[in-house]
Every structure is written in C-alpha cells, then in structure tokens.
Image (cartoon, rainbow over all chains, first blue to last red; front, top):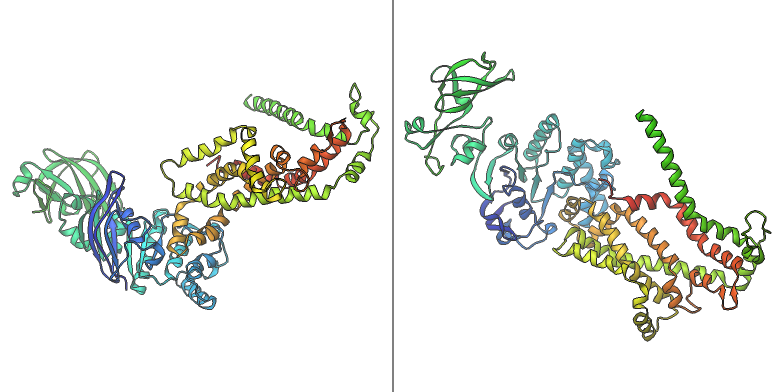
Length: 329
Length: 276
C-alpha cells in the first residue's frame, strides 16, 4: 500500500509562505513526478511528505493514517537523495543493511534482503566496497538499494539523477522506471528536468511558486495545458506564444504553438533564420518573424536552412488559446 | 627568474620557520639540559653549556623524594576524565548547534568561547568556596569537573566545526532509515566525525595535563597531578633548578611522547575545515 493524501498542506519559513496550501492525492502504485522551476517548492513538498520538515498547517495522510506529526522513520517511506547520502564509513553491505538494523531485523533475514537487492541492482560484486570506491551510478544504485530493502509504502526521490553525467542519467532513468514496473510501489520523484518527468511519470504535478499549476498524465499536460505556465514549461523547445492581431484572429489574448507544430516551406509567416541547430534526428531553428517576434521551430531530420536564410512558416498543429489571465480557453 | 625568486623565498621561509621553532623549543631544551647538571652548574654564571658536569642524580633524588607514579596516575585520570566528561556534554551540544541552529547559536558559541578570555583568577575565590562546600577540594572528581568546565568551550567549538562539515543529508538519510537521535549520533555522526573527535580529545588531554593554576589551587596532596608535582620542588628554602628541571622533564615527558606520536592527527584535526 502507498496511498498518500495531502490536505491543505502549508509550509512557511518565517514570513515567507513557501507552500501556501496544497491538496493532492497520490494513488497506490503510481509514479508521480513533481516538476517545476528552481525554488518552486517541489523539494520542500517532498520533504514535508518525508517528515524531514514540519508542516505549518494541513495534514498528510499515508494509507489512511494521519502521518502529519509522525517522525520520518515512522512513516514507512524511503528516500533517495540528490547527493546519494550514503554513509561513507560503512561498506555497501552495511549501508544497505542500516535501515534493517535500525528496524531490529534478524541478521539472517537482513542477509537475504541485501543479497536480493544487490542482485536486482547489479551490486553483488561491490558489497564489501565503501561508497568512496564506487562510481556515481553505482553510488546511486546503493542509495536505491538502501531504500528498497525496507519494502516501504512509497519511495521518495529528490532529484536523484542530477549529479550524474548525461549518458548515465538516461540509463538510471530507465532502471528506475523498470524498478517501478517490477515493484509496483508508489514513487514520488522530484526533478526540474521535464524530459525525466515526461518519460517516467504516470502523473505529473507541475508546481510554480508553491502552488500546483496542473496535475495530469504527461500527454495530458502536453496536449491540454491549463495555463500559460504549464504550456511553457512542458515541451522542449518551449511553446511559442503570440499575442496581438495574430492571437485575435483566434479569438484569444495569447495563442501558443509548439515548435514541432510549425512547418517550414510555404506559409503566412515570413522571417529570417537566426540560430539553427542540426542534431541529425531533428533541427532546431529560431526565426525572427516580423510582427510575431522570435519563433522556435523543430523539424524532423535535417532541415536545409541556415543562419540568414529568409523562410516561410506555417502553423500545422494544434493552436492553444489563452485568455488575458493566461488560462486556457 | 620566477623560479629563482620562489627558491629564495622558500629558503627564507625555511630559515624563519626553523628560527621560530628553535626559539619556542629552546626553554624546553634548556630545562632538559639543566636537569642533567649539578645544582652548582645549573646556576653558574655565565651559563655552562657543554662544560657542565653531567649527572643523573637529580632524577634519582626526585624519584626517591616523591611519589611520582601517584602524581602521574592523577594526571592521567584528571586529563582523560575531564576530556571524556567534556565530550559527553559537548557532543549533543555541538550536534544541536550544528544541525538545528537557532538565531542566536553563533552568539552563544562566541559567548562560550569568550569565557576563555576571562582571567581564571577572577573566579578563583567563588569556585574554591563552592568546591570547599561540596567537599571537592583535593579530589580527582573535583578536578575532573573543574578542568572539564575550563575546556568545555573549546571542546564544543571544535566539535561544532567538525560537525558543520558533515552533510546534513546523511543525517536525514539516517532519520529516514529509522535511526532515532541517539542511533544517529552513535552510528552515523560519531564515526564520521572520528578524526575530529580524536584531535579534540588529544588537544584537551594536553590542555588538561598542562593546566597548573586550578590543579595547584584545588589540590593539596591526594589528587595532585604532575603540575603540582613540579610546583612542590620550588621550596621556600630556595629554588633547586636542576631538581626542578628534572621534575619538570619527568612531568612533561608522557605528554611530549603522546604529542609526538599524534602530531599528524593533531595538525589534521586543528586545520580541519580550514580549507574547503
């Protein structure tokens, strides 16, 4: 079981309201990602759920039990930290065994669980090493191992991949997703990387200034963002926003078009190519269109356009409409 | 050119360092030298350096005249005891200051440290009367408490500095893993701060061992440590420099040996956290 309910959870540090009041339901077995820009309160929210920070008001219910005032150890949750937070003076085996030792588990059962976790995480050959003798990826696996041996109600991940290099990050991302598939335990994952959010989540919670902007599946957020913030935050490169006469044609204050929903060739918008990036699989170009400003375009394959070219663009996908308050129409 | 200047600077620095070291070491060296001279040779003017009559009589007489092992044992009990008692109080205090600091934590630390700047003699009368009332005069436990109180600000300050270097996330991980406060301190914080704890212990043992003011004021015979043992050789009949030097050499020898073998640990501990 791992159902978590937040009811009007508020957190303030002195005069500053970091989380003004949040309601959220996380279902058992869900992979939920908290995403948002730096300082939006996503890590604070995770720490509130973990019990590492006290709530200023509101309640946190875990599996039907009010856990608001429970210490971290009593909440039945496990956490993986950004900095791995391994115990440097203990071997991998002792690191993984630590929560079991604290729970007073018999040594024989500890050994069984450690061996099982090590085998799942490919750590069997490293059990007698210390964290200092491991690579970043291996350390992160140890941190995950320490979390899974406890068989917690839910896993909390606080930007666990941000210290890894790009290639390792992709590999670990897949490993965590596979782990979720096999364990089917609730996972709450904090990241500022929307690619991680889109690829891993069953449900994404977009946070901004301590408020939830939208909750939904990755594709719901992509296709039907509730407001300008979510529309701009989800998707890479970010959505183009156009105001003025062009928006008025669509009876909106602002319209949004994703870069991948614009074609190069014939079209009503004409402009000069500024920056062009050719990745082979995709081409990213910035076009300065008179009256509209800089328009980002993402084309499949190699677009034969370069800096200074004059080209025409046409919207060729969904046009998102927003009112003067930034809400989707 | 740059290399030449660098070499020259290195030479000057080395000479300056040796000069300072020799100036600091000279009194100790002279004391050890004097301890092997006769009383006449020890006070001879001009001072005799190599022409003195070397003798071991001073050591033999000091050993025969006093109960050195008792003084030595008292020093061990008092310095180790006061350090351990200080740790028992300082570890939780430094933990609280490092990991759950309040708005006034820094001020509190500064205030604690500032008490070390107060002349000890200022509290001599009240402390003496208090100890007299409590029956702690000339007891080892009394000196353990007194020296612990004297050195507590330094112990707290040093441990605070070491604890600040330990990432808070590791302690949070321990809390998530089910560790209570004492398990967290015992299984995670203490082993991680072990180098810092070791150098704090060493420094405080040395400070307590060398403490002379309180050990002389608060003891007479039973609990007197080696500092009082040295003082006992400055008799009202006059100073016997050679015997006094022999007694001093015997008193500092154990701590000198401890310091010599732990100098690496001491330097590492004292510079811990200085460079990030």
